[in-house]
Image (cartoon, rainbow, N blue to C red; front, side, top):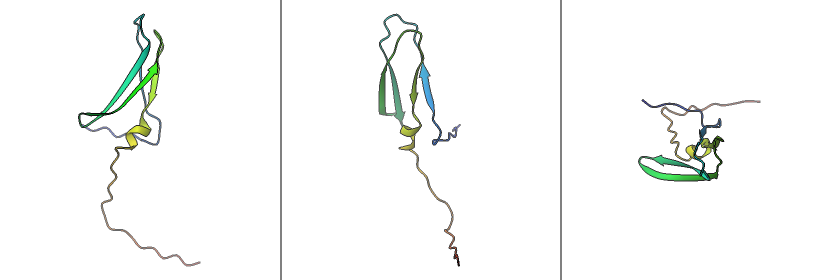
Length: 76
């Protein structure tokens, strides 16, 4: 079932690792099974890393208008 998100508001993906050898965190964004973005950030053990992804997701937002346009006349 699809979930609706407000893409003008920040959306964060986050994770942390308890591994002693943690040096980086990777966020992979896929669309229709194809990788479109890979983001790598420095990371340390037991520290949460956040990725802001809403701006990236907006690139794949398809907006369609269903209906007929209305014509308005304004007189001043």
